Image (cartoon, rainbow, N blue to C red; front, side):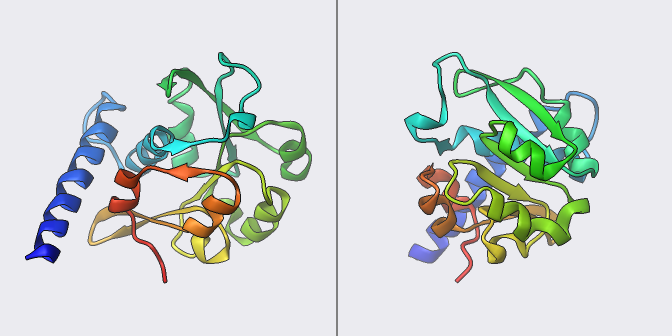
Length: 183
């Protein structure tokens, strides 16, 4: 009975997250890339950054995008949205090594075009309070924080709790209930 109750709660929470995601894109049926972008946006609502991650109370939340793909393009449409009382600023990084050192990111989305460089990018951010997200299931196994993927025609995500904890980020219990936690 307990397992069934947990499954029902997960289904309801995932449904609510999907509805919130769909509301971000007003035009028609959203594509997979738009749903994934909406998940990234909603992740920002369920993460607590350390106080040192923001220099000022009115500082925007910066979502950096490395590489190019359809999810990254959909994320750019979210510029100026509000999240946790802050405006969302999107920064598209062209030269990764230079930019990661000079741009202050709170969230880093690594596009599929950079999949072969994921570990190198993560090494640049080691011990930084930056939520890292990529669009492939292997990302959390390489030390990334959140992997987006499609399973049974639904967008799913898995979380590497060790990586989030080591970088000073706290994820809400609601978010952890919806995620797949790799063992």
